[in-house]
Length: 69
View 1 (spheres, rainbow, N blue to C red):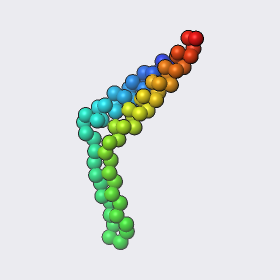
View 2: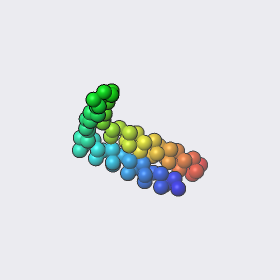
View 3: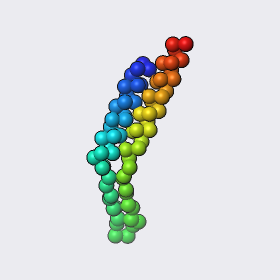
View 4: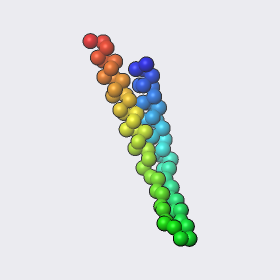
């Protein structure tokens, strides 16, 4: 199970790097005639999968090294 988290962490890092190199960002504006205007900005979302992947890899390594002692 711990090796599974290690593999999932690596996949998250790869997905984050692909998002970084593909420059996925967008801007959307939703407004109404008499309502508020909302601006959705999505950029730099590649940080979240990379941080999650690093966290999963570190946790997996800690558990794998702790098991061997």
